[in-house]
Length: 146
Image (cartoon, rainbow, N blue to C red; front, side):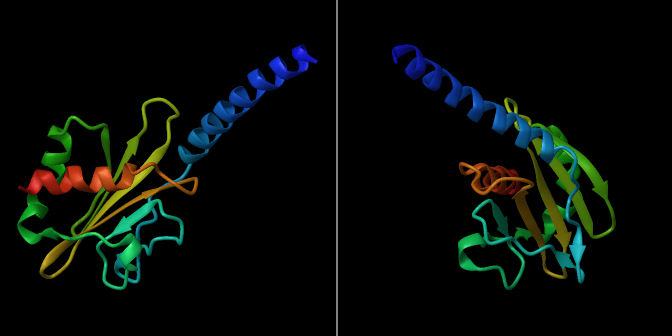
């Protein structure tokens, strides 16, 4: 009986950890959602996404960046201590990824140049929650502006 309990106590954390490694691996095969009808893709209903685009529900809403930040986004991200990887740079759109250190989760960070602001979207590719990772990422980028 004790042997069965010990086996269960060892197996559950191992299975949980294995599942997170599996999800991390799954996220590496995706790509940034890109623009939809000229705007950043809407956030899903899960709480692992933030966006400054108009029409974003309050639960997913963040502030846009000032227009003046657009020319320096790539240089600012490259100079950051975070592990940003620039994926796409176009005239009005920039896609970036960031990979978590332990499980290897890949999250997307996107920017869209609008007439008067720079819209930002940060989202997890897999899973439901994000332990505040997207909010921290957006705050880090907003701090680059200051």
